[in-house]
Length: 164
Image 1 (cartoon, rainbow, N blue to C red):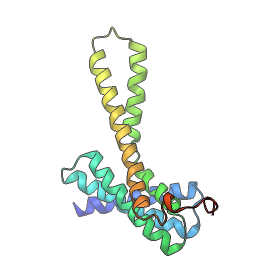
Image 2 (spheres, rainbow, N blue to C red):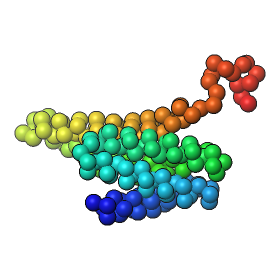
Image 3 (cartoon, helix red, strand yellow):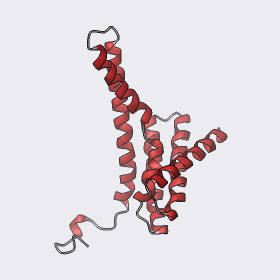
């Protein structure tokens, strides 16, 4: 089991680094993006194998990325989004989004008169809801850390200090 977790973290590390390079992340943030991506995906992988659901495992992985991203941002003086975004891309539900689009195309082609239409509509709606839920988990997981560790509240800002 440990071998599979390490393999998953290793592969996710390089995926996150690839997207960090694609997004022109500063050199000091590339390694952090890779480490966060590998760790977050390894947590998701581990929780999935422990029996957690896909959505809850993804949320735990992204919350970890978000919290450690805030910590690393303070250490290397870089905005957290610079390395949390490439790290979370490793968990984007591409397969389910693909199945959703493929289902929509098949429904359009076959119409509503086919024998398999009910199953196809059900399957497409299921994949759409799963894709949407996973994407919301990615956004919420990153935002939780930013909301917990924000320094100022909007209520504390005065009229002139809003844009400072």
